[in-house]
Length: 331
Image (cartoon, rainbow, N blue to C red; front, side, top):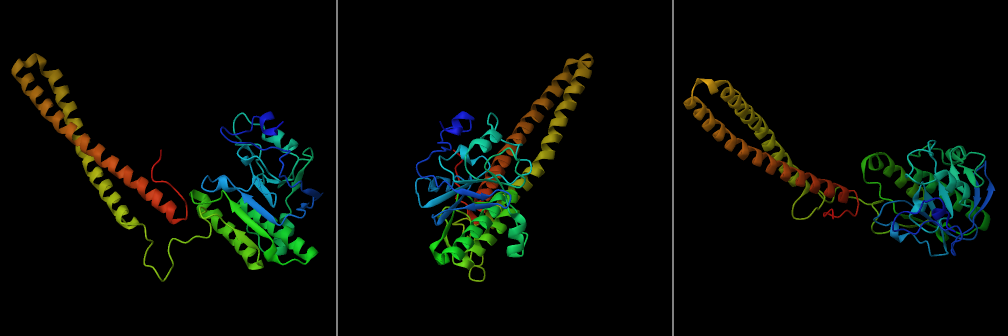
């Protein structure tokens, strides 16, 4: 029975982790405290994440690859050979209705953690101190960076042991873009640094065309600005600012008219005893003010809608400039 089914961890519409998958690598844990795991005879390591742009390309049915996943990605893919949950608060922010602790205990594969509980039979302490000393740098801003440093370390040991060239070994990255929020601002550069370390050794890198990693918006010095098609990013940003400015000018007019209508209504209520003629004049004033108010409200809504659409286009264009494969349509 799949442990995903047992622990209600299978994502809707996905094939969750299967411990006895026919292409499983069955890695051997050499030393849990020192973080030593033997990758065996396989020469390819896939570093896998959640990004839908290339997650479907994870080579789960290819026996030449070792599949490395993270956090609760096991809900979305049928095979994994080594796992990562580096977070100190690994018990928090998990999908409702799932048993993350139960999965870690029973998955049967090495699970790298920063401080693994003794009760987890296949949990392995990540050898962060050794890798910092080895590389001379403490630069880990995401789980993916830990995964890449581990993969490089494994290949280093295999090259030293077998004498094979680095080019015989491969690191692939699937389902990882890092183009939104702190992932882009903090994590992406670190991941690309470790990819550079692998490239510098001569390790073969496999990155799907859909990934946003190791991509540039434009070639500095050769191009003045990114080519975003017929309408440029700067142009649409200016249009968004223009729409927002017009809306901001109309909003106080709208509030003023609304206040005027309310004042007339209050005056009417107080003037009912003073004669029908005054009330009729006030009714006319209210009707005229309401007509103007409706017109201004419609203008404000129109400009706000246009502004929101511009913002959506800007967001899509910026993510595409970061290398992301992002559709313009939301449906």
